[in-house]
Length: 63
Image (cartoon, rainbow, N blue to C red; front, side, top):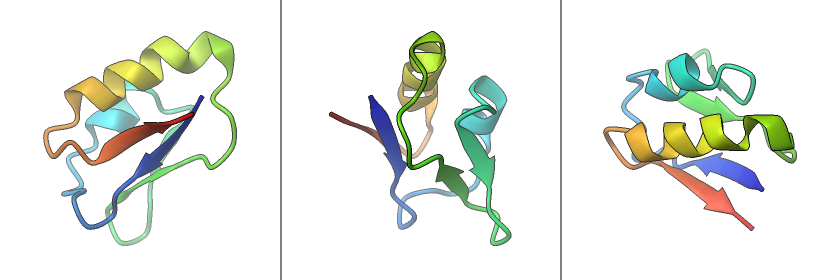
């Protein structure tokens, strides 16, 4: 699985970073950035939790 953050929807709450810091980080502009590579299998549940808990629904799973 891979994930992406819609920079037009992200409001910088940082929930994704709190739930899965190995995959998400905050850019210099204060918006979330997702690692563009494959999410390691052991982090998939945490990444999906971040997707489900994003207040702006800015994170999507890419097949």
